[in-house]
Length: 120
Image 1 (cartoon, rainbow, N blue to C red):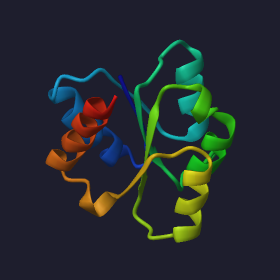
Image 2: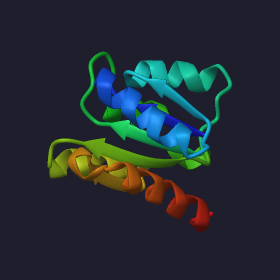
Image 3: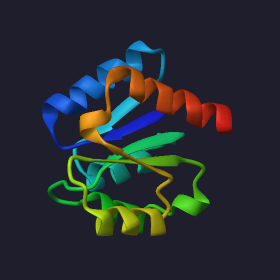
């Protein structure tokens, strides 16, 4: 199961379409707070694609509240920004991978998912 946390409506929909068309169960959220609510409602993601800069609750705050080590989810940080300090903080809080959105072509998203699954 894949959770996409992305505030851009068009990107959120595109990522959902790409990943679901490859046969994966996908839920989406538009900020960290919605993601936490989705998880609290019983959705247990195996993979979380997480934007860092979002309104209401950004990706860093989400990671602070979502106990990554206690969960079995792999967190892939998405960003359009090459903000090394933010990325480093995300890794400190349990993120596993980092992908620039500009490089997140459909085949790349599916390859990331397949790589994570094969590593488990």
